[in-house]
Image 1 (spheres, rainbow, N blue to C red):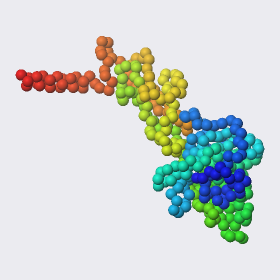
Image 2 (image 1 turned 180 degrees about the horizontal axis):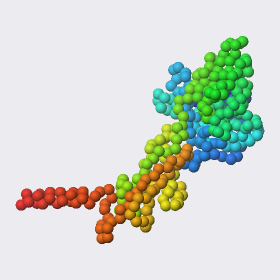
Image 3 (image 1 turned 135 degrees about the vertical axis):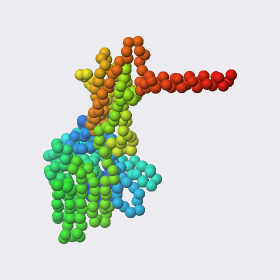
Image 4 (image 1 turned 30 degrees about the vertical axis):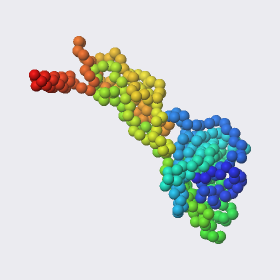
Length: 352
């Protein structure tokens, strides 16, 4: 992905659909950008950018089908805001930075920052400083016919010199097709997911290269389990710390295993407040008689909340009895002690 910080904005918009797709994202730092409300990465509390399906910190990777080049383009969504872009009126914006990623050497080169992926105002329509990698969605989280219509009008401006007299919007598969029959039989097809993520470009333009989506965020809530500190659900003490095991995941596709999670605990009749997950969660059943007690734990990341429950069986020790070592029975401990004592006696006899 190439971000060009010296090309004039008007030139970018003129060539965006003729050559940008072969050199990826283009950027301009010459345009003043004034920001209003912001949506940034905030760990498990990160919010989705309004009017879009993406979250700050997410990475989308594209593969340009160019023979002889082992390069893929990585786009990281950095933040969103509502701003008066290009004096067009307040609109919801998605901003990004990107890299060229050499798949042979593994080297990644930062190619630009603060690039507008999407500007959306229902009255004004769609605008961008890049190809439409991210497009708006409706209140139901899906791309609507009006959004596709606005997008087709936006892209048609850059194809006017190619005599694209034919346009068809495939609303059921979120695709837009341009082609001509009277000039050079050129065509170009754009495709998105139902939640507004660009999935590919196919064209017979000699200036272009076909593109396909290489990888995208999973956007899944946490998968986890929890139990007591000693891996037993039968305890003889009300003070029994809990430990959480979270399945490794990279849900935002940034190449790093997720670490930002929060938890809260429900026991009795109240929830605890959300907090970072410690190695052991301090937990006490309280002054309760013998019996089974349900403990509910919720863990969240920025994509959602997952809930799990366990049932702890409390068996208090009898009066005067030393509490058992959790996880082991007194019989097994006694057998181990007897075996060890017999071995020592036998060894001493041999020395005599």
